[in-house]
Amino acid sequence: MNEFKDILVYIDDGKSNAERLNTAFGLAKKDNARLTGVTLSSLKPEHLKVSDKKVLAEMCKEEAEKRVAQFVELAKNEGLEVSTRIIHHGKADAAARLAQVARNFDLVILRQANPKNINHATVEEIAHQVILLSGRPVFFMPYIGAHRIPCQNAMIAWDGTPTATRAVHDALAILKNVKDVIILVVQEGKKKTAQGELLADDLAKHLQRHEVNARVKRITSGTFDVQTVILNQIAENDIDLLVMGGYGTPSLKQKVFGGVTKSLLANMIIPVIMSH
Image (cartoon, rainbow, N blue to C red; front, side):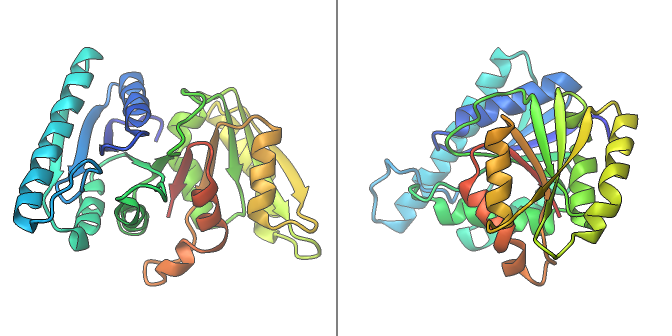
C-alpha cells in the first residue's frame, strides 16, 4: 500500500490535539484521502466540575459535539471535506467500539496517553484496543507534540517478526517520503536475533524497490536493555519517526504492552507507527 486513502483521527481536548489534527490534515492532503474525526461522548473535560451523573453525561455529550464541530471548521480552513463520528458507548465499551470502527480505515491516528490527564486511563485503553483488535496500523503522536512534521528521518525497530514486517509495510506510504530510513537491529550479547540478522539486509533491498532510502544499522546492547538502545539511537540519529511491531496476541494483552512496546510508548518523544 503506497497511499492512505481513508484516515481516522482521534479527537479530544488534550494539548496534543492541535498537532495531531495538523498531522492528519497533512497526510490527507498528500494522498487526497478521506479524513474522519472520531471522539467519545464519555470523555470528561477537565474543566467540568459536575457531580450529578445525568447532568455530567449530557454536558460531556455537548462537549463531544463541540469538538467535532471545531474539527470540521479547522478542516474547512484547510480546504478539506471531512466526516465525523461520536461514539456514545460508556467508558467500559467505548475503546472496543472505536477499535471496531477503525477496521475500515487505512490508518488510525491516536495520541500517547498523558499520565497527568484526567482521561489517561481511557486514552491508554483506546491504544490497547485499537492495536489489538482493529488490525490496522496506528500512528501514535506524543503528548509533548512532534518536533518535525512531516517526518524526515525514520527508524525501523527490526527483529524479523511478522508484526515488525506488517508495521514496515503498513508504513510504506510515509517511509517513501522521508529522507533517510535506518533499519535498526539490536543484538543482545551472545543472544543473536537470528530472524533480524537473516532478513535485515533483504528488507533494505526490498524497501529500496519501493523507493525508500533504507540502510541497516546493527547495535550490540551491552549492559542496556533494548528500549534504551532504541531511545539512544533515536537521539543520536535525529530520528523523528519510529516504526515497530506490537508484540503478543489478542489473548495476551499484557504481553503486547509489556517490555519494549510499553516502555517506548510511555517514553516516546517522537511519533510511532505500530502494527500488530
